[in-house]
Every structure is written in structure tokens, then in C-alpha cells.
Length: 266
Image 1: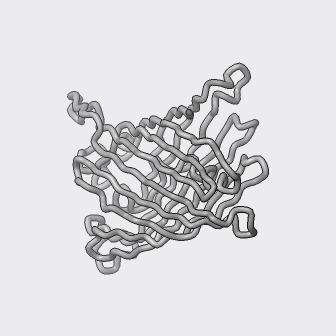
Image 2: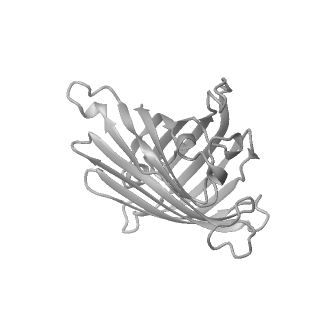
Image 3: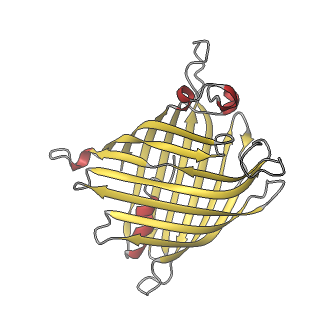
């Protein structure tokens, strides 16, 4: 779960100023109920599949660009395969912190910005995730009322802890579409990046059999926004969820994991 309103954040760079935005989400993950056999088994501890994920997102803009970050907190399953209670609270955390620089607002190039980002986290099973640093240009688009926003970033990705390849690339696309008087929102992102994962062998294209080299993830979301209903304008609560589509991310090969979620926007 990440980048849920990042496209709207990028689009707001065209404005002189914007108020800070923060939302909190809670997602019930269905992965451990869908993939239960063989190497694609997400019920075992080693598969690292969470039961619930809480996400905190923040965005604010200033005259030179914008700041964005999110934190994912993954919670372990309350029940094991034997039905006994295993609740142990947070089992992992992941964060992305991004900065967009745009010193040229008001010019013909104002749709372009320079992106800087840090990724990292910790997990009780695998320890520290490989830290990553990303740099590169972002192109953003929005229509007149910001009901449709999109951005595309081409990034140089440095993964200092990667044994095979420290210099990599990443392409990120983000979109947001709000319709029916903003009662419904269709948002999401995709990431395609290069990273060697020696523990994931057997993937297509792994000619040297030394692990995955290319990873894809996309998380389209659909939300029903309660504040668009007459009489509920002050209730900033949304109901919906997402579908996590990935290849060589959770494990070797393709996975499709739906969630059911709730979101509150401050």
C-alpha cells in the first residue's frame, strides 16, 4: 500500500500553495487465503505475508515543490495454521520519503519536476530491507478541476546493499480519477524496477539462475467517499480497497492479492 494520492500531490505543484493532507488507511489482506500451496504458500511465516496493513500518508506543497511520505505497518496474523493465537503486533514497517523540486513554476516547463526519494524498512523475518535512493525527472498532468491526475517518473535507483548490482533504474506511474461528484475515486500506481534478488530463482529471463533481476508491482484502488453524500460532508471516511498485482515481488512469478480497506482523511 503506497502512493495512494501521490498523483494528486504531483499535480498540485502547479498551484502556488496547498494545504497539507494526511490520511490513514487500514487494509485487510487476503493473500494468505488465496495462496496456500507449495512455493506460492503465503500462510507460512517465511512468506512474510501480513494479516493487516496500516498506512499513514502525508503530503504538503510549498513554492519550490512538495514533500510526500508514507509508512506501512504490517501486522502479523492473529491465528496460525493450528488455530492458536499468534498475535504479536507489528511485524514489519516500510517507508518512502519523497521530495519534488520545481523552481520554474509559471513557465512552459512547470509540468516537469525533479524527484528525490528514499525507501527502506525493517521486518522481523528478514531484518532490514535494502535501503534505496532514487533520483530523476517527473512529468505530471491534471485537468482543470483536478478530478483527473497522472504522473510518470524515470528514476536512477541506487541500492547500496545489493551484492550484484548497486546501480539500477525504476519507472513509476501514478494516477487518480475522481468521478460522480467525487463520490468515487479510482487511484493507484505502478513501479517497474531493476534489482537482483538471489533468493528468487526460476523467474523468466533469469538466464544465469542467480535470482530475479526485474520486479513489477501495481496497486489500483477503488474508494467510496462518504463526504460526497448529502448530510455527510464533514465525514472524511472512505470505504473500498485495492488489488495488489505483482511479478517477482512477493515471490517468483505473478501474484494477485485483493484487500478490503477503510480510509480517513484529515
